[in-house]
Image 1 (cartoon, rainbow, N blue to C red):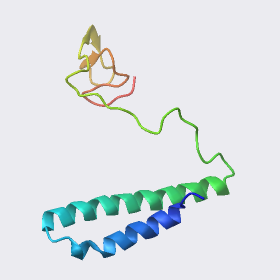
Image 2 (cartoon, helix red, strand yellow):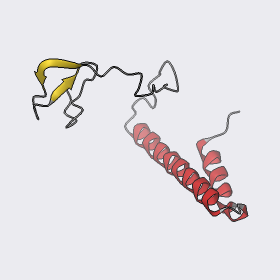
Image 3 (cartoon, rainbow, N blue to C red):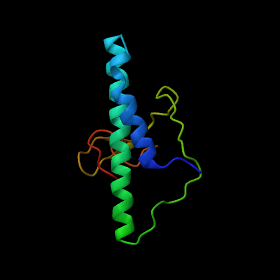
Length: 107
């Protein structure tokens, strides 16, 4: 049987209680921040599941992959559409984006 979100949350809380054993203060703070972020995500997930269950909606949408690779910005093309500007701020648009990189307006 796979661990539950509640078990994961308890595991994180136990790890947080052991932070005093990390001697290096920078490392202790880095680990604390990671644990706090993971705890918040676990709490948010639990709340989202409860809301979906109350609304009797589907809890998860199936996706092809649980991770998404992110390319370095050096590898991404930065071509702009000649003469085409954002309808909101009129800044030039990048051809490969579906939003304005200047103001964030969705196209």
